[in-house]
Amino acid sequence: HVQLVESGGGLVQTGGSLRLSCVVSGAIRSINAMGWYRQTPGNERELVAVITSDDSINYADSVKDRFTVSRESAKNTVSLQMNSLKREDTAVYYCYADLNVIIHAVRGDYWGQGTQVTVSS
Image 1 (tube, rainbow, N blue to C red):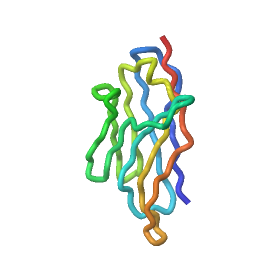
Image 2: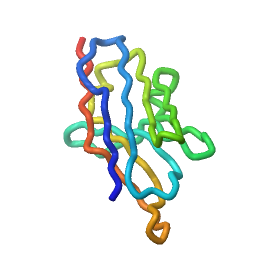
Image 3: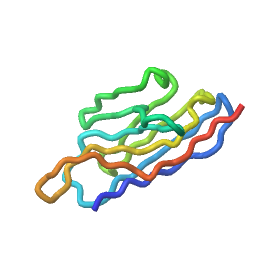
C-alpha cells in the first residue's frame, strides 16, 4: 500500500509565497519521478513541476522562475517552493509519484489527496 501525504496549502495574498511538501510511504522499491500537478474546477489536471530520480526537472511555462521543485530521496519527500504567487495559481495541488512497488516491482502512478492553494488580491 502506497500513500502520498501533502501539507502546506492555504490562503496567501498576491505576490506571497507558500511551500508544499509531500511524503511518500509504503511498500516502495524505487521512485522514478515525483512532483506536483494542479487542477481548477472544470479543467483537466495539469503539470506544475516534476523531478526525476536523476534530478531532471520539468516546469510548466506558467511557473518557471517562480516555483522551485526539490526532493530528498532518503526521505521520499518532494517539495514545491512557490514565490510571487498570482491569482491564477489558485488550484488544488496534487502530489504525484511514478514509482515501483516492492511486489514484482510493478510500476505505477500514484497521487496524493490534494491540497488547496488560494491566492487572493
